Image (tube, rainbow, N blue to C red):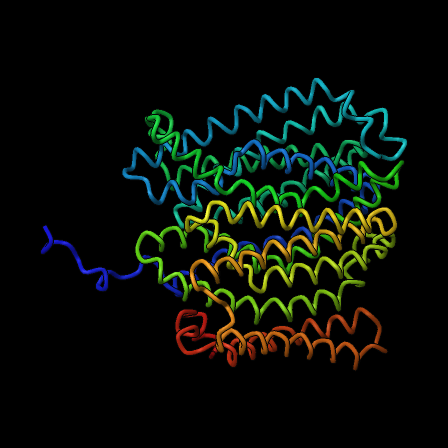
Length: 512
């Protein structure tokens, strides 16, 4: 038997930097579909008004928070459970169990909220014209909860097969296109008060139907219907999800709880307007977050697979992701800040008040993203208590900052709270990975990449200062045009030979 056992030194690692690069490229291209929201969201504000948009943001955020609870984090748990399943039947059993224990309870929660809508509605701040209709609106909109949960599980199952691009295109691109088409049609027909909410429900229904087709590409739907779910499989699947629930709740709290809290804390239509301003700024600030989300989506399943092969080989993946993020995210943040005032005007003249919120969120997202690769690695490599500690620390800091600032500063204070919390949570994962596994990010290669990122940020700031007399739109256009060559220069100077080789065909085409 010993003679048949392969030498661990001869086993090729399950994944490499090239796998991270190719997966990130697919995921990144798909995530670029998020930019479509900077087109759809202004259209919604122009058609339905800032206060109605703010109420929509609040209800959408509330459903997202509920979905994080009712999915039991099994969307992330599938990243562990499916790659490690012992057989094809076990893979399908894992997915079947995940769908059953999330979608059915979500439908029950939606039914309870529908019945309680008259009691819940008075707690939210909305414009006077919407107040009489809010109970019916809540009772209708809450049925997006089971649709959202089903989509989360279905697309996570595709991601567990290392299919990073299709599921994100489905959620970001097709869902947004359907929402925009339905919203424009309802607005044209004169459905103004409920139009945006109905468009959201219809778009989720369309995307849910498409997600069934997506599942059919990677799984046998017939086997999925009848796959066995023995007790050990159910236990392991549930355990894999609950282990990642604390950080998922924290991320959802940082992203979606602020508009809900603003809608509850501020009186009258002011709560809806503040939630709308925060929602607008959050959508724009999500563009730099594409970098973090790209590596989070890719590194979670790849780290789980690499751990099974050779945990020591996670270090090159981690440091490679950090170098790429540092080179890209800092100039991207600079160009988004520079064009923030012009971008906000796309929404409405009232949206100009969101500029301080936007700047604070962008700085916070940059701080989170630069070393954000640590978070999915900590979650996927067996550190079960550390994500909980990170979440508690981040939420505690956010709560303290929010308590001190929201009453006086409104949406800007909420942005300060969110930014402080996400930075603490993200950087805590960096420190833990450094102490527990010796994976420190600050080697000489990272410092060179960080210097390139800071150089790009500084260059864009200087360009903005030099052309400030041209006006905000021409100035922002010049900075945007300079962004791409600055990132190319950063990649060329900031990456080592192995990093460039891992970029494969794309690296050769870019002449890095």
